[in-house]
Image (cartoon, rainbow, N blue to C red; front, side):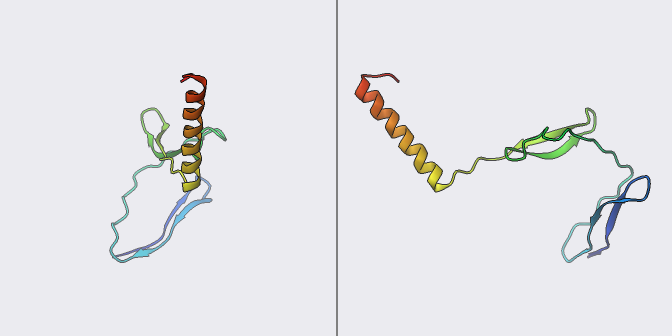
Length: 97
C-alpha cells in the first residue's frame, strides 16, 4: 500500500505537522473529521518519568503513562552496596533497622 503525505495546518494555513509518505505493509491512515488542541504549561509534565498516551476528550487533560525505570548495571551495584552498608550498620549498632 502507498500512502501520500498528510499535512496538518492551522486556521491561517501555517503548516503545523507533516506526516511523510509511506509504502509497504502499512495500515491506512485514519479519516479525520475534526481537530482539537490543548496548550500545557512549560514543565507541566516530567518527560523523564511519564509520557502522554492520549488526551481525554471529556476533560481535555493529557492521559499519562509512567515510564519504566531501567537501572544500569552500575546503579544496580550501587544499590546492592548501599543495602550491604545498611545491614552492616544494623549489625554493628545492635539493630537500628
